[in-house]
Length: 93
Image 1: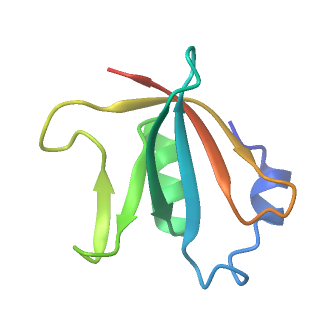
Image 2: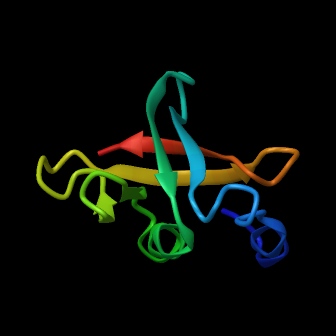
């Protein structure tokens, strides 16, 4: 998971408060999803260990699997070198 220090370095201003997120399968490396998180989505993701995005079309937080039941359990979250994109390794459950 992200450390508090890594969280403090995230550059939300550069991304106008919406950080791109790539979700990969934690074993195969297959790209499962691309979405966006705002600080509230990241906070919920960290608290519940399930990937939560900010849905730009619904204008609300959206946890992957909330309607389908196909959740993405977080294994790790890593920022890129510019602290403006996140890579999430996840286990589809």
